[in-house]
Image (cartoon, rainbow, N blue to C red; front, side, top):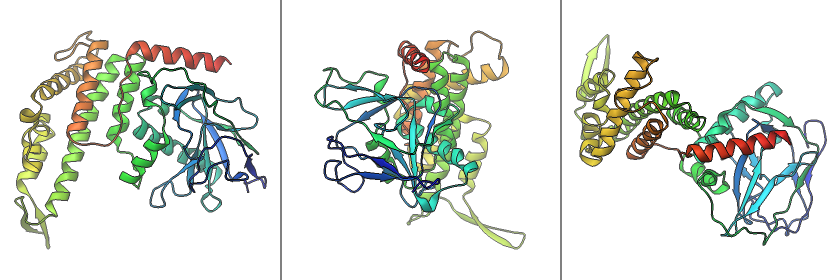
Length: 367
């Protein structure tokens, strides 16, 4: 039952599309939904959907979104326009819509003032696992439907083409499921949000912001991942670090003075984040592993320093402050994230394709 006492029912359709119980819509008479609301940030979101995809993706109980689900894009409010659907060469479908629908189980329904706060956190998590950088735009509630209509995918209506570069970061249920299995709490590290902001800035041709945010994201990520990996390995036996006991103020604490010294000095000299610190913590240095990447990150650091101290300059030491420089900055940052095994997907959309996407969004808003 919805909060106003109404039921949200998805009528039986001929499409064989599974739900979270393993049943398909052709095997069930209908599907009932409660407490559904739909949000939008005015941007066109692209999903990649399989016939076997579930009706909903439900967050695990140990996550911060327990009791919440993301609904399939073809389950739409009955008073909303249906999504645009395009068939692909491999039998999947692109579903394009400016809406995102949630369902909340009755025992987890938040206060009305908290709904958008939770929805915003879920959208930020979706941004992390899908790479849809534009998901960060401000959300607004567009529907609280009494009924959700289950649309049908046009089976057999395929264009014969594969995914293009814009569509490769489409929202997929399989990405959500694998991310939730890997990190059941569904936390979103700050550094991933900063890098997505850098990617979004690049898409709208704000090269200065893109380069600056890429540099900040790398340093925040490297410092955080080194601390996380150190804590994990410090708990292992035999002990590989130089842990000592220090006495003071009536307490005894365990410290690794080598790690603390390197960590403190890295705040003044970020080069330690890619050489001495990782060599000490997990036995690898980026200088040895990925020397070219290390050089490009040094260029990114120099460009960041130039932007921070000389914001009015049209160029900077290290990287040009233009589209080429922003593109290099993002690829260096993504390379660093991969080297440190940080979470997240970060597809970089070329500016020409980003412009195509913005034109599509403008057309959608005019409809």
